[in-house]
Image (cartoon, rainbow, N blue to C red; front, side, top):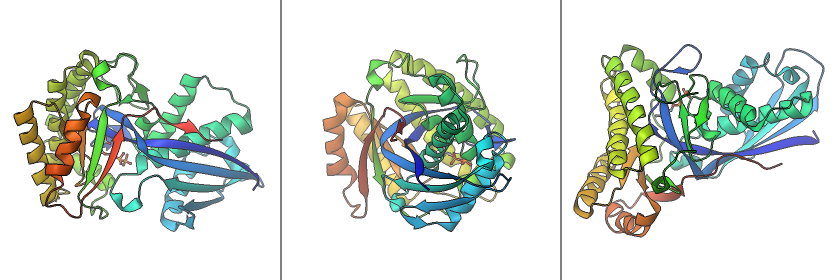
Length: 346
Ligand code: DP6
């Protein structure tokens, strides 16, 4: 195969959490995330003409090695979108993908990998089928297909801050794709820092997919939907007015509510580790004693994302190494920050 296309796409950290879905990957509530910078996936698609048919011909390499599990997942995804990208019936693909972060870091990679794949597929559509999308159309279409691959991936297509899911508080918000909400972002959030404290890098025992499904029978599901909608409305205001104390409140409320949903599912499960609880307690104490508006959020896992503004960087980083990482010999950190979004490599 001598033709190829390559995209780099970042991971994102949700402040308002997507948890629970229905229909074809539609979210029960809106979510808002910060797009990251360092944590990203690079995806190359090599392509070559084949005999026209409805069968996906695909080879998938992850970090230079054949990966049957990923190949199967991507094959099912590509099969499901074949009628949207007609060139897929006439071309066979070899996809190579690699992450900037170690696979064992416990960072969810579906957002970066599925967004990189969707961007490359839509770009290839322009290249092969001669379609011409405006920048907005291109990003929207990529976000739409990224969502079908993994819900959180829909948000990674945009720089800085993205909103996925319909809310009456934001015009143009949509269930089927994310939108950028950068235009009105307050200066306080520019270059916002996210230090990821990796306390445990084991693969999680319950997948996000299974976690989302458990929301169907969670007795607090309706209350969670109301809470997430209210928090979305509040956060949209805070992102405009720069009120960092309110940001802290909303952000931690969302993180803990996400884990509360796991604890109150039947069967229940917990992805928190003792070190997670120790760390979040320390962050709270540090904030209360210094009045620095630093806060945490959690993904569906035990690792902690510590969020703080650029002007508090020095003090917070000192706290992280001097206090937070004490008695955690196994812990590692990745200093990431809000990023510029995906990039075409070639
Ligand atoms: C806790 O996007 O991984 O990270 O749509 O099944 O692929 P699928 O789920 P996924 O769920 C992410 C859940 C979360 C919160 C968030 O990113 O909004």
